[in-house]
Picture (cartoon, one colour):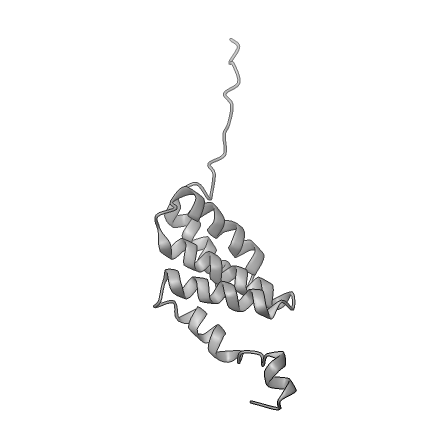
Length: 112
C-alpha cells in the first residue's frame, strides 16, 4: 500500500495581526529597532488605517536614525509619531530627552 506524501506546511508564526503586533512590541522593548521597524511596516501595510501601527513605525524609525547618528531625521520621525498618536509616551520621552540642537544662528550669536 503506497501512501502519497502529504505536504507539510508550517504555520506562519507572524501571520495573525495580534501575534505580529506582540512580536513588534517585544522588539521595541528589546530596542531591536530595525526588527521592530520591519514588523511594524508589515502591520502598517496590512492595515494602513490603523494609526497606532504607523505611529510606532515612525517611533522605531526615529530610534533607528538616532542610533545611526542622524538626530535631525530622528526628531522628524518622533514628531511624525506624535502627530499620528499624540498619546505615544515613548516618542514624547525621546523628544524630551534630547534637546533640540541649536541652529547655526543661535551658535553664531551665542544664544542658548
